Amino acid sequence: ANRISPHPSFHKTISMTSASLLPLLCLCLLAFSHSFSTPYLPDGKYRVAKQGRVAYTSTTSLFVKDKWDLLIDEDDDDDLQFDGGPPVPRDMKYNMFNINRQRENFVSIKGIAGKDLTNDVYARDPETDTFWFVGKVARVSDIPVEKCIARQWAMVVEHSARLRPTELYPKWGRLQLWAAPGDSELDVAYCKPEIQFIQMFRDVDGAGEVRNMEVGFQGELYENEEEGFRTIRTDDGKAVKQEIQSSPQQPTEAQLDEMMKVLNEVEANSGEQ
Figure 1 (tube, one colour):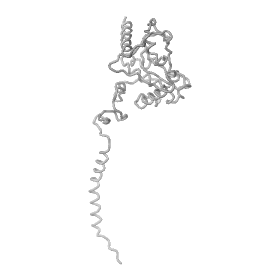
Figure 2 (tube, helix red, strand yellow):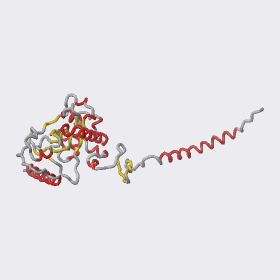
Figure 3 (cartoon, helix red, strand yellow):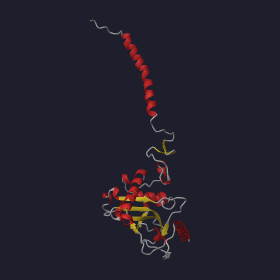
Figure 4 (cartoon, rainbow, N blue to C red):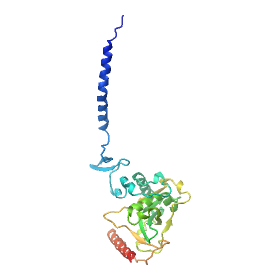
């Protein structure tokens, strides 16, 4: 049987029809994919909806804003940076992923070992005698506190600078970190002589070999316009003032907050004299 071939004009018609439909097909695919993408805003941010709320966050970190955003805002990083010093390990850069991981590590370690493997951390401008409480660290049993803080140094120092932008940020590259026994804020407020701060250092042998899961950091956060807890100490970490005799009865949370406020006011006034 003879095979009948279509007229050449038929092929030409099909080619022209395909070419005319190609742009339309591309537009359909673009619209379809866009319907599943995160809505993009003109200012370079994505919108994130969660639990009925809409929050705005930078493209590199999708999370709902909370009180941490008072300290960290990736859009303002260029205005709040310290240039100098050794490079910061990637897992200790000050971002929400690392902050959350180290905070969870702290909670886990303390939940198992208690406060014996934790320390309170204070930051100090070396030109003053004021030590600011900036958070707590925890470590596993075979990691000394010196390695624990050295491993997390960059994160703790940057948190300190962001927590106290007026007092500590200007001295970011020169800040000192000091360790005190875990959960000793009340004894520090009472100027207990047995509580002595120990200065920590960034460069500690073997600190770089510590895995991030073996240490944790829980940064201090202020709520309800707190002034922040600070204490006056000597250059060797001892209390300057005489011990305040505590009441036999344990103070309530409200009484403790009021006492901290009074102590802060007293120390602030003494520092101005």
